[in-house]
Image 1 (spheres, rainbow, N blue to C red):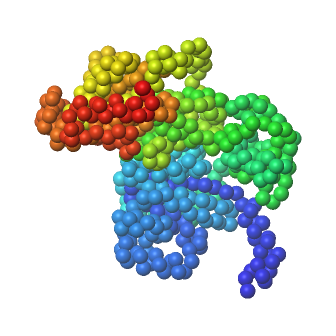
Image 2 (cartoon, rainbow, N blue to C red):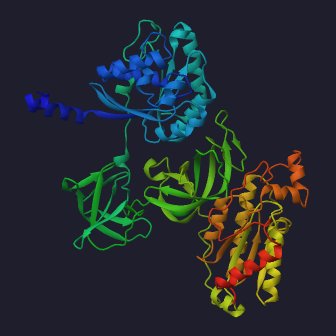
Length: 632
């Protein structure tokens, strides 16, 4: 018979006691092999939260994958992936719940390897405290400094510096003091609200749960004592009310509510609210939950809000109080942690998700990249994996947000690759940019349709893409000659010609190639608006930028023409001698040799120039334009 069956009152009292306990989210971080997983395993073990069968399984696995000789390897309680156990490292973020008599905890074990810094940022995004481990033998490492910087950047204000493996330096007070003092000097600019240094041995338990007799010179708390006692005051409930709308709840004609999770603050029945983006106001008529109506709701509670009148509200809108509104803008400055192997390039379009809103975004400028060792601000044209930069971001539409330091819930966003849907970056908003508030679209009487009608044609972009030497310019030139002979209004934007003027300041790095195509795509859009047929002949190696060019114009106005000539044939032709120079190492960043080319996946027209003459391919393209209604 269970406790709930035998003594229901006692069981209810137990649940009530658990509910009353305070709650702490914390992460363990630091360099690889500093003992993060072992420390969490020790905390779970000492908290009596490991079942006998779990312990038996870990004992068995310790003989296969353990790193502690004959002793049980407590790190295996957390390192659940087979790759983690085989390599003896943490790869993924592992979350574990445990509780003591005084407090409940959720701990995130984050990876120490540099290539998994993105996982560490994920674990830190919801934490209130960071336990930063340092190997007493090795001292502060580059990754230790990087994690400390990210902890500060992500808004964690309390840090416990756990100097681990103190047993391997013979419990030396001098070594502990040296590491503590060095870290305090390093972390001084971060101005943490709380910083406590503790000498520990995660393997043997010294100063983890109880104070150790082997460090008589240390008179501070054990790590567990500190975690139970530290005052991490969450003021999210005291901040202004914010609720991003996740879903418009309309189960029938008589009910219309707006569902979401309260990001911060408190809302009560009768409170006035406004839609942040439009400013339309109403009052809260009902607050509905799964358990029925309630009088109020606070941060982290999922509710459905019913307003007292009809207001246009959609997914992605944010309900806020009229007296404490967030910023609403389509440009802002932000710190961005880059998480992808492919670098961040200014001008490349991404999807930006903030709250429940997703919009297209571009990083317009990288103001600087931060050196995590010296905190120097370095010039940068791109951000690589795990790098942090301060950037200007431009959006396709206005969004509501707060500065991250003011409200972590509404000041954070992620960047998503539009082709793979992978999360590639995480951002923390610093402030809105207001430089474009005095710029508006000028209404014009003459439209694109009227310009095209006057020319007797339908405007279009023929985007020729392919390797150098594939025949793009040759075929584009022949197509234009035939169109002009037929009385059509055309223009060619050729890669080499444009670099003599508009793009003469750009080189051939991946970042410059992205900007090169962005400018050309905008120029091509202007020709389309003029009612013309514009032929764009560029290598344009990246799918993302070609997709961006397509999306600048209306559906049906963009034809991608893939000149799919094999690279062997391009090398044989080599009309400018570029392949020979690239192969000899005298020409860097050459597409197809040491810079990638991403072939189109769904081009409207594919041409292999080894099959037929250029004139035949040009005739085929003119026929394609006629069949699609661009010309008569």
